[in-house]
Amino acid sequence: MSREHVRQIVDAVSAWDGITTAPHRFGGVEFNLGKVEVGHIHNSGMVDIPFTIRIRQRLVAAGEAGLHHLLQDSGWITFFVRTDDDVRQALKLYRLSYVQKRYRRPADRAQDAYAAAVQALTASGYSAAVMEALYPAKPDDADADES
Image 1 (cartoon, rainbow, N blue to C red):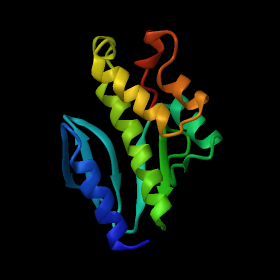
Image 2 (tube, one colour):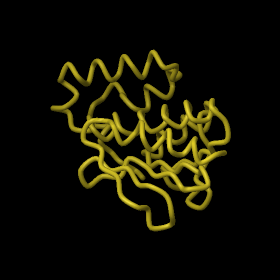
Image 3 (cartoon, one colour):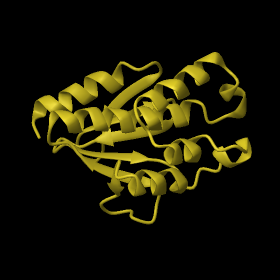
Image 4 (cartoon, rainbow, N blue to C red):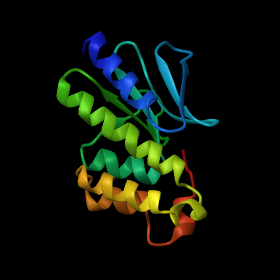
């Protein structure tokens, strides 16, 4: 891990529409969409991102992320950035969180932007199981934030 990896992630995520940044209370940078945290990155390169438990289960099972280093029974994941490939994976995880939080309301899911966001996530290689957890067939289930 290098400071450059952390900087790349902070620069990329902070450029997304609606994202604001703030110092994280345990060091690093927190990314917020309004009042909702999309995730944070510690100065050491440790990435922590909140999801629903269902999404976290699928991400861990697919090998996309690990259980949170402290909150293992929650929806939070932890991912460690050490290489350029890890930067890409971290950005993929942040983007998944961003889309999940930005389009969590059923009315938002009816927009063209939602369809484009889902298509972009699918193109970035998420497994069908992860996408089903994020966008279940029954819209009521998608809003049950278990984190």
